[in-house]
Image (cartoon, rainbow, N blue to C red):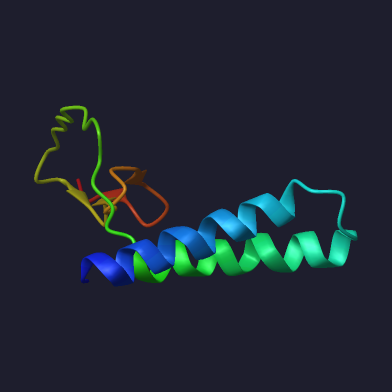
Length: 82
């Protein structure tokens, strides 16, 4: 993304947020914040500020256990085979 494109995206998001918190009719405010959110999801780079260390352990007897990308443990399909 070039600097001018970034500036344009930032201005669009700012306009959307200003409308969203204004006294405009609720339909316009909702539409403005939805547009701003869509732009942020498509155009803005995201980087975590903090990532906690996460350690887990298991046994070979536990099957079907998953650790999801968001680090939540998924036990719904897990079972012990012994």
